[in-house]
Length: 313
Image (cartoon, rainbow, N blue to C red):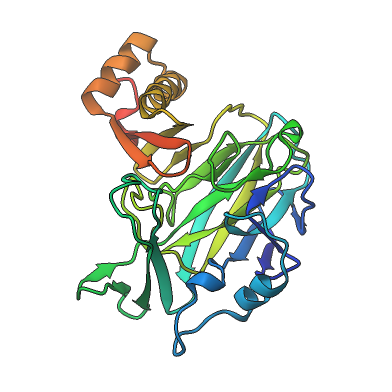
């Protein structure tokens, strides 16, 4: 299988949107690995002199078309032979933090507590890549746990160009910290080629991402893209080495929980041959409903169960 590199830049990034009409900048074969470079943040979040700002980021800020607010996304990458109704399996390999700073802000009228914090506050956070920690302003060294907040394919053509802020059936702004090195994400395909993009690098994030931002930073990741014509999905799923994960997004958190749970019940029927009643019981005994994020317009819940329990007998 081939290995490709996709650098961030004006010609390879789209800022703020997913769209079925956004042309692929690279086409690969199923099973190929793409090393994707990403950057994060406009000129309003850049650090003071002394930190490394990728030249690609400065170029994108100066020249790229923008749909704001939104994320700088690298791609799309098409997979030859992918058609609507297929599934794209995205195996996430090595993730590297590629700069020495990140950023986090509190924004008035946003986040989980929109009226509690009336003043804008931006913090540039030094990242010590050798020690794998972020140096927080009050003296705490927070361990880095990098992952891509945004991973998605092109949406259905009828949707037109949609913001990268709101996660939907095509994936996008999932902000699921379980999707780190070694995880696999499954995305339904809506356009020929699938057209996968990634961005919104996070150095660390808590479940919920409550103030709207994580440690936003530049990441480079390895993605092995596999075309699955033997699967059919309506919404993203994922797995880690140890767990199966279903996901749901909706403005109402209760609805998210219900949908993620129903998806897990269906998945347990598929992988373990459990009846709906047996799967519902097992979810009550052993599955975890976790709040993915509460700040992206559509909130998120993911349901997790250990693979060793997803079996009969």
